[in-house]
Image (tube, rainbow, N blue to C red; front, top):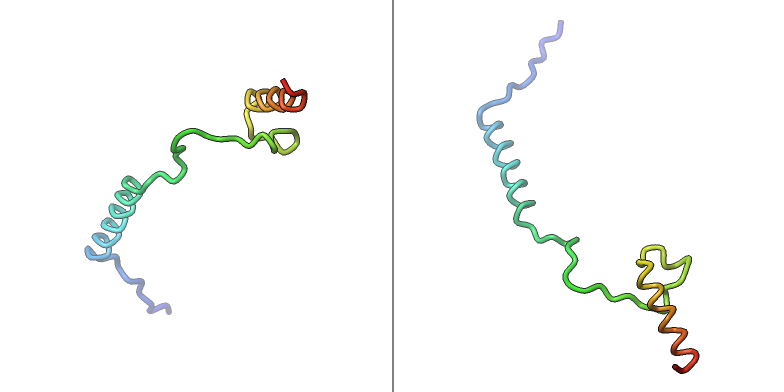
Length: 75
């Protein structure tokens, strides 16, 4: 027969798991937001053309085209 007994979860195990969970939650709550946008986004007009500009707003692409046309024609 099977005489193997599975270990029971003790109070110390529960306290350890709960404290690790609380530490994890607090760490995530107070960790700096690395994905937060800190200030103004600057776009490079040299790459503001399709297909490379799929993540650049259309208004920025239009402004870059206008600026490039002005620079090309000398106005």
